[in-house]
Image (cartoon, rainbow, N blue to C red; front, side):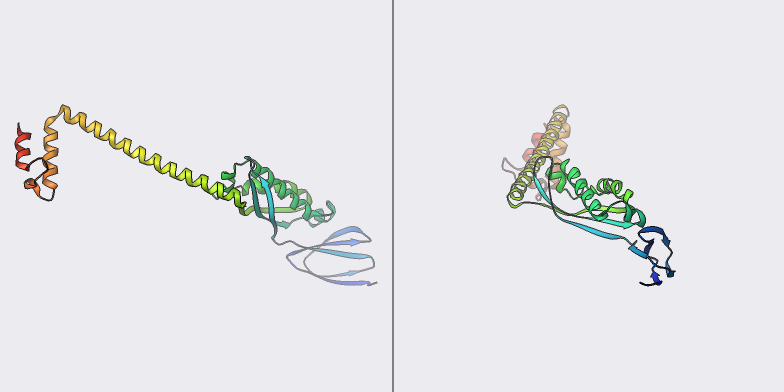
Length: 231
Protein backbone atom coordinates (compact mmCIF):
# COMPACT_ATOMS: atom_id res chain seq x y z
CA UNK A 1 0.00 0.00 0.00
CA UNK A 2 1.38 3.35 -1.06
CA UNK A 3 1.93 6.12 1.47
CA UNK A 4 2.81 8.88 -1.03
CA UNK A 5 0.50 9.53 -3.98
CA UNK A 6 1.67 11.74 -6.86
CA UNK A 7 -1.23 12.80 -9.07
CA UNK A 8 -1.34 15.09 -12.11
CA UNK A 9 -4.72 16.74 -12.70
CA UNK A 10 -5.41 18.56 -15.95
CA UNK A 11 -7.41 21.76 -16.27
CA UNK A 12 -10.07 19.83 -18.16
CA UNK A 13 -10.55 17.39 -15.30
CA UNK A 14 -12.30 17.36 -11.95
CA UNK A 15 -10.70 15.27 -9.21
CA UNK A 16 -12.38 14.01 -6.04
CA UNK A 17 -10.31 12.85 -3.08
CA UNK A 18 -11.70 10.05 -0.89
CA UNK A 19 -10.23 8.45 2.19
CA UNK A 20 -11.53 5.09 3.28
CA UNK A 21 -14.56 5.67 1.06
CA UNK A 22 -15.41 9.10 2.55
CA UNK A 23 -15.22 12.24 0.41
CA UNK A 24 -12.53 14.66 1.57
CA UNK A 25 -12.25 17.48 -0.98
CA UNK A 26 -11.93 18.51 -4.63
CA UNK A 27 -8.35 18.60 -5.87
CA UNK A 28 -7.15 21.60 -7.86
CA UNK A 29 -5.58 21.18 -11.32
CA UNK A 30 -1.84 20.63 -11.35
CA UNK A 31 0.55 18.24 -9.66
CA UNK A 32 -0.79 16.93 -6.34
CA UNK A 33 1.11 14.98 -3.67
CA UNK A 34 -0.90 13.23 -1.00
CA UNK A 35 0.59 11.56 2.07
CA UNK A 36 -1.16 8.79 3.95
CA UNK A 37 -2.97 5.52 3.54
CA UNK A 38 -6.50 4.77 2.38
CA UNK A 39 -6.70 7.58 -0.19
CA UNK A 40 -8.45 7.23 -3.51
CA UNK A 41 -8.80 9.82 -6.28
CA UNK A 42 -11.59 9.74 -8.85
CA UNK A 43 -11.07 11.88 -11.92
CA UNK A 44 -13.72 12.98 -14.42
CA UNK A 45 -13.36 14.73 -17.76
CA UNK A 46 -15.26 18.04 -17.69
CA UNK A 47 -15.12 18.74 -21.43
CA UNK A 48 -18.15 18.61 -23.70
CA UNK A 49 -19.04 15.10 -24.83
CA UNK A 50 -21.69 13.54 -27.05
CA UNK A 51 -23.86 10.54 -26.31
CA UNK A 52 -25.46 8.95 -29.39
CA UNK A 53 -28.99 7.55 -29.42
CA UNK A 54 -29.25 5.25 -32.43
CA UNK A 55 -32.11 3.16 -33.75
CA UNK A 56 -34.81 4.68 -31.57
CA UNK A 57 -38.35 3.92 -32.74
CA UNK A 58 -41.37 5.99 -31.74
CA UNK A 59 -45.00 6.44 -32.76
CA UNK A 60 -46.25 9.80 -33.99
CA UNK A 61 -49.62 11.26 -33.07
CA UNK A 62 -51.19 9.58 -36.12
CA UNK A 63 -49.65 6.21 -35.15
CA UNK A 64 -46.90 6.16 -37.77
CA UNK A 65 -43.67 4.52 -36.66
CA UNK A 66 -40.53 6.58 -37.18
CA UNK A 67 -36.92 5.59 -36.65
CA UNK A 68 -34.78 8.25 -35.00
CA UNK A 69 -31.07 8.85 -34.55
CA UNK A 70 -30.25 11.59 -32.04
CA UNK A 71 -27.47 12.80 -29.76
CA UNK A 72 -27.02 14.44 -26.37
CA UNK A 73 -24.27 17.02 -25.88
CA UNK A 74 -23.30 17.17 -22.19
CA UNK A 75 -20.55 17.88 -19.70
CA UNK A 76 -19.94 17.18 -16.03
CA UNK A 77 -20.13 20.38 -13.97
CA UNK A 78 -20.34 18.88 -10.46
CA UNK A 79 -18.28 15.72 -10.15
CA UNK A 80 -19.40 15.03 -6.58
CA UNK A 81 -23.08 15.01 -7.56
CA UNK A 82 -22.20 12.93 -10.60
CA UNK A 83 -20.50 10.40 -8.32
CA UNK A 84 -22.92 10.33 -5.42
CA UNK A 85 -26.51 10.84 -6.60
CA UNK A 86 -26.88 8.03 -9.16
CA UNK A 87 -25.13 4.71 -9.57
CA UNK A 88 -25.48 5.06 -13.35
CA UNK A 89 -25.65 8.77 -14.25
CA UNK A 90 -25.24 8.18 -18.00
CA UNK A 91 -28.19 5.79 -17.94
CA UNK A 92 -30.27 8.57 -16.35
CA UNK A 93 -29.42 10.96 -19.19
CA UNK A 94 -29.99 8.30 -21.83
CA UNK A 95 -33.43 7.45 -20.43
CA UNK A 96 -34.34 11.13 -20.10
CA UNK A 97 -33.45 11.71 -23.75
CA UNK A 98 -35.52 8.70 -24.84
CA UNK A 99 -38.56 9.94 -22.91
CA UNK A 100 -38.15 13.48 -24.28
CA UNK A 101 -37.99 12.13 -27.83
CA UNK A 102 -41.01 9.89 -27.27
CA UNK A 103 -43.11 12.72 -25.82
CA UNK A 104 -42.09 15.30 -28.43
CA UNK A 105 -42.46 13.05 -31.48
CA UNK A 106 -45.62 11.49 -30.07
CA UNK A 107 -47.26 14.91 -30.10
CA UNK A 108 -46.59 15.47 -33.82
CA UNK A 109 -48.24 14.19 -36.97
CA UNK A 110 -45.82 12.17 -39.12
CA UNK A 111 -45.53 14.97 -41.69
CA UNK A 112 -44.60 17.51 -39.01
CA UNK A 113 -42.17 15.06 -37.40
CA UNK A 114 -40.36 14.59 -40.72
CA UNK A 115 -40.35 18.30 -41.49
CA UNK A 116 -36.73 19.48 -41.34
CA UNK A 117 -37.91 22.99 -40.65
CA UNK A 118 -39.54 21.99 -37.38
CA UNK A 119 -36.70 22.04 -34.87
CA UNK A 120 -37.63 20.25 -31.65
CA UNK A 121 -34.11 20.60 -30.18
CA UNK A 122 -35.02 23.39 -27.70
CA UNK A 123 -37.86 21.31 -26.25
CA UNK A 124 -35.72 18.17 -26.04
CA UNK A 125 -32.81 20.05 -24.45
CA UNK A 126 -35.00 21.66 -21.79
CA UNK A 127 -36.60 18.35 -20.81
CA UNK A 128 -33.33 16.44 -20.51
CA UNK A 129 -31.63 19.34 -18.70
CA UNK A 130 -34.21 19.12 -15.91
CA UNK A 131 -33.23 15.50 -15.23
CA UNK A 132 -29.50 16.04 -15.70
CA UNK A 133 -29.02 18.98 -13.33
CA UNK A 134 -29.59 16.97 -10.10
CA UNK A 135 -26.77 14.58 -11.05
CA UNK A 136 -24.24 17.34 -11.78
CA UNK A 137 -24.51 17.31 -15.59
CA UNK A 138 -25.11 20.27 -17.90
CA UNK A 139 -26.93 19.62 -21.18
CA UNK A 140 -25.71 21.65 -24.13
CA UNK A 141 -28.07 20.28 -26.75
CA UNK A 142 -30.31 17.35 -27.54
CA UNK A 143 -31.02 17.08 -31.25
CA UNK A 144 -32.29 14.71 -33.90
CA UNK A 145 -29.68 13.78 -36.49
CA UNK A 146 -31.89 11.71 -38.73
CA UNK A 147 -35.48 10.51 -38.87
CA UNK A 148 -37.09 8.09 -41.29
CA UNK A 149 -40.05 5.78 -41.84
CA UNK A 150 -40.36 2.18 -43.00
CA UNK A 151 -40.49 1.04 -46.64
CA UNK A 152 -44.25 0.52 -47.02
CA UNK A 153 -45.16 3.62 -45.07
CA UNK A 154 -42.49 5.61 -46.93
CA UNK A 155 -44.08 4.70 -50.29
CA UNK A 156 -47.55 5.63 -49.05
CA UNK A 157 -46.28 8.88 -47.61
CA UNK A 158 -44.46 9.71 -50.85
CA UNK A 159 -47.61 9.01 -52.87
CA UNK A 160 -49.67 11.23 -50.58
CA UNK A 161 -47.16 14.07 -50.87
CA UNK A 162 -47.08 13.71 -54.66
CA UNK A 163 -50.87 13.83 -54.86
CA UNK A 164 -50.92 16.86 -52.58
CA UNK A 165 -48.36 18.67 -54.73
CA UNK A 166 -50.38 17.92 -57.85
CA UNK A 167 -53.52 19.20 -56.15
CA UNK A 168 -51.75 22.43 -55.25
CA UNK A 169 -50.59 22.88 -58.86
CA UNK A 170 -54.14 22.33 -60.11
CA UNK A 171 -55.49 24.76 -57.53
CA UNK A 172 -52.98 27.44 -58.55
CA UNK A 173 -53.91 26.99 -62.21
CA UNK A 174 -57.60 27.33 -61.34
CA UNK A 175 -56.88 30.47 -59.34
CA UNK A 176 -54.89 31.96 -62.24
CA UNK A 177 -57.68 31.16 -64.69
CA UNK A 178 -60.28 32.66 -62.36
CA UNK A 179 -58.18 35.82 -62.02
CA UNK A 180 -57.85 36.07 -65.80
CA UNK A 181 -61.61 35.68 -66.22
CA UNK A 182 -62.26 38.39 -63.63
CA UNK A 183 -59.84 40.69 -65.46
CA UNK A 184 -61.57 40.04 -68.77
CA UNK A 185 -65.00 40.60 -67.21
CA UNK A 186 -63.85 43.90 -65.73
CA UNK A 187 -62.42 44.95 -69.10
CA UNK A 188 -65.66 44.03 -70.84
CA UNK A 189 -67.65 46.23 -68.46
CA UNK A 190 -65.25 49.13 -69.06
CA UNK A 191 -65.46 48.75 -72.87
CA UNK A 192 -69.25 48.50 -72.68
CA UNK A 193 -69.52 51.89 -70.99
CA UNK A 194 -66.62 53.43 -72.98
CA UNK A 195 -66.69 52.24 -76.63
CA UNK A 196 -63.90 54.65 -77.54
CA UNK A 197 -61.51 52.68 -75.28
CA UNK A 198 -62.34 49.52 -77.21
CA UNK A 199 -61.50 51.26 -80.48
CA UNK A 200 -58.23 52.55 -79.04
CA UNK A 201 -57.31 49.13 -77.70
CA UNK A 202 -57.99 47.55 -81.06
CA UNK A 203 -55.85 50.11 -82.87
CA UNK A 204 -52.99 49.50 -80.44
CA UNK A 205 -53.23 45.76 -81.05
CA UNK A 206 -53.10 46.28 -84.81
CA UNK A 207 -50.13 48.61 -84.55
CA UNK A 208 -48.14 46.12 -82.45
CA UNK A 209 -48.86 43.18 -84.77
CA UNK A 210 -46.20 42.04 -87.25
CA UNK A 211 -48.01 43.49 -90.27
CA UNK A 212 -49.12 46.75 -88.65
CA UNK A 213 -52.33 48.28 -89.93
CA UNK A 214 -51.96 46.46 -93.25
CA UNK A 215 -52.06 43.04 -91.53
CA UNK A 216 -54.77 40.92 -93.15
CA UNK A 217 -57.09 39.17 -90.70
CA UNK A 218 -59.30 36.16 -91.09
CA UNK A 219 -62.37 38.41 -91.19
CA UNK A 220 -60.95 40.96 -93.59
CA UNK A 221 -58.33 43.64 -94.06
CA UNK A 222 -57.32 45.97 -91.23
CA UNK A 223 -58.58 49.00 -93.21
CA UNK A 224 -62.02 47.44 -93.24
CA UNK A 225 -61.91 47.12 -89.46
CA UNK A 226 -60.81 50.75 -89.11
CA UNK A 227 -63.82 51.90 -91.09
CA UNK A 228 -66.00 49.78 -88.84
CA UNK A 229 -64.56 51.22 -85.64
CA UNK A 230 -64.95 54.80 -86.88
CA UNK A 231 -68.72 54.42 -87.21
